[in-house]
Length: 355
Ligand code: SAH
Image 1 (cartoon, protein in one colour):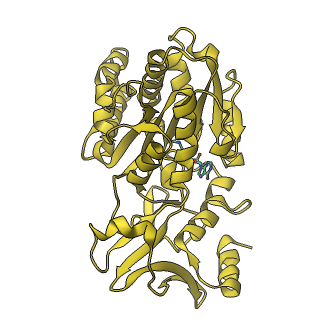
Image 2 (tube, rainbow, N blue to C red):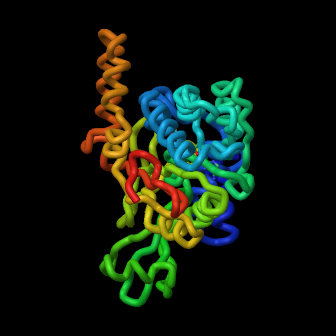
Image 3 (cartoon, rainbow, N blue to C red):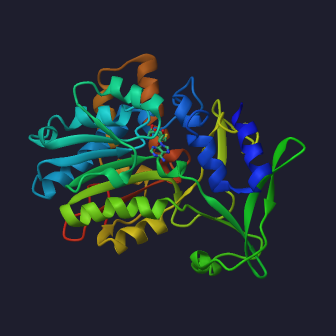
């Protein structure tokens, strides 16, 4: 049975499903889901990410978190966590770079929140010697100081999609007809959770809601507010998203979202406003939302690239220059990707970010 058969059968039996239900099945169905069955990253996979582009990304994230740890009086022990670590590349680069910070690694309990058994194996191979432990979700994070990175994690959280109408919001549904999936709409209704979007939308506009985003942020922010720590959340998106941002990528190319369930990566732009709001509500401070290019430049990515370039020639040097550009240039990832930092109200923001 394919995932399409399974989803179609479910719709025929129980009725049309939301985009969030569809994304959840596509990405994490226990036996047929996209992440549960493969390592999707890299040139041979479907998409690539900042840590896979260059070691500089994980190194600088690590140094920002380590400085936040120093600024807060070197709490020990502490949880060094990553949400959705992919291949473990970022964490490996982070651990190598922070080895020079006295006491940091000795106090760190490396903790990976990962839903995919396939990726857990890859992470274990790439992080030997660091004794990581794996958690199924953020609620299992210990009550302890928490220094955390989440890169391209929130964009994999399923979103619901709503279209503004005269008399409320209609939700987009996925249905099945003629042996293919297609879009439909519910009847319009009131949506208190979208009240704030009446100010910046017009009839016919689509907005998205990510039900998991705020509870995950609350779990992180509560620990940081109570025990100290810092979180760096890096993802594509903006303060508020507008329009249909759900995208499917297969073999590095966009494909129809409904065409190959479980065979393509599905992501949506991250709305950072509800993350910052959830952090505030949990008693934690949220930084200014900062473009990735600005964040990395402030952390010294150009100096790091120049240091690496000294020993490089030919194709390796060309790759390094291209990677630096790809991570920071406004026309590449520099502007589309943003960083939000969470930190205790009485602590300075992690380096690279402003209060
Ligand atoms: N951060 C990595 C990988 C990004 S891909 C990088 O930058 O390269 C998204 C990651 O999140 C994958 O590791 C995927 O398996 C994981 N993931 C997706 N949904 C998840 C969930 N609900 N809980 C835990 N991990 C999840």
